[in-house]
Image 1 (cartoon, rainbow, N blue to C red):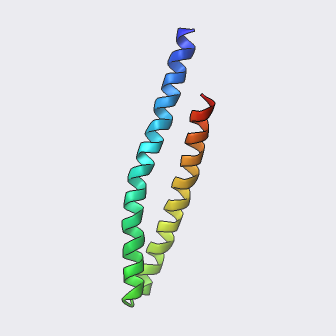
Image 2: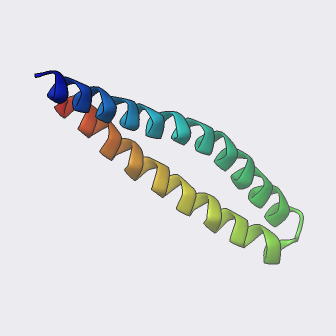
Image 3: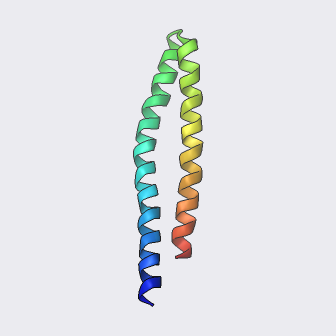
Amino acid sequence: MKKEKKETIREQHKNLAVLHRNKKLLKINVIILSLGLALSYFGQEEIGEPMLWLGIIIFVYTLVSNYIARSALKKL
């Protein structure tokens, strides 16, 4: 029983670490998206548009990994 309990706790900590990392990623993502929008607005589309796409890709990644981590936590 103790080995199973330790494994469960280890899995919980792993999933909580993913959620914590994603919170930091979302803060960085807001900065990337705002810079991309600002650069696109001021006429620097060659720099702004790739930054917007990067922000969208990071957002989708964090959304999916949050969903997976939360569903794994609910199963434990």
